[in-house]
Image (cartoon, rainbow, N blue to C red; front, side):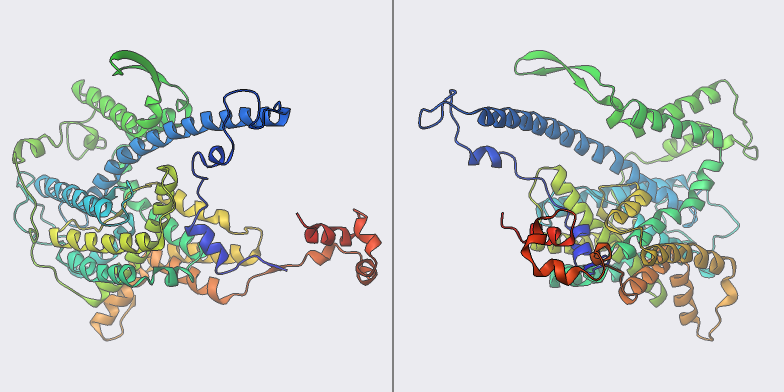
Length: 526
């Protein structure tokens, strides 16, 4: 009897992927000789020679894997910077600084500074893996839900774009976000310091993680549509260029020249594969620059396509100070509310689950052994400390392992550990994901539907039910731990009414077309 939806084995497989065997382990167990004879002087067999050829092939494959690891680490840092800068750009409009270029530049510089500090803490004191700490998309969804409350609506007047952004924002102040992240991060520190992460993850399986992480990316489709909608042609061109470089030209190596070992050498470098996103964005910008120079794009701000001009935000560079060091409390003193804290807790838990998976993936690709439990606990605790630093500096976001940015794809990849032929699993996955999209949309369209008479309770319900990943993750967690799993009974292939007879006589164990043959094979000693 095989249980398809266990609560322990599946979760361990999800968060503890099997690492590759240590390099050189097989070679160290074999006797090394320099000729074609064995240790005793007898001629070596054909099998031994074939083993040597296999060892050489494995060494070549290891060298290729090392090159891929180095390329992957470079790509990791390149993509991470794009993910870090995307967070403040998404939060600019809800924070009412969409027209305040000085404030946006200050927010971007702040998140880069905090990301650097958190990376130093994580690599020196935390899990000590070569992994970059940056902004997390897991906290964007609750942040948008908090800023959607009526008291944080942006005014009709716009800020002066030439301001340097050093004064606190009048409306849309991130003080509420800072306080929520500050308190929610204490839970992450508590989970890491007490070692309760493993206990919590015993009850959180792929059917709870997949909808949660999927909805992090799917809930941002509105913001993505707004950004791309400023000029769909340029957006489509950029996407096509990224696909061209990352997929169609990924196997094309460009000859490069390098000075190594006191001589110039020519080597093949996967340039398009590593810089696909950068080349795609630069190509899109170059097209916009040419269209701006030749006055193809409209010059009036009320016309469609004006935002694609490259000279729209030149004043942001002209008015920016030469030097500016972000400091704690630059936006004001953090404020606290129950509704904001509870909504941010859901984001912190989702970020914790995502980070643990990133730890194992980073260790596997960097050639390090799987991180032990104490390193994982320490890494989660340091991430909580990093979120506190982010809250004090006022990044409008937290910090997490900035290893992968294809958030929906990461969520879908968790389903490889789930039997998708099971109606139970399909029900849980579909219902939790669908509910995570429908309920927040309805509550955002009907903000006055919740009226319990207690203002604070109304805010708590509204924030929680407008947070997509909370709805999907909560429903997936409850259903996965309450609906019993389906069982697979291999006896359905047995011949009816004859099983007892086949098991009684040993002669039937040697007939390969009888069920007893299968049992004898399982019990046969190796």
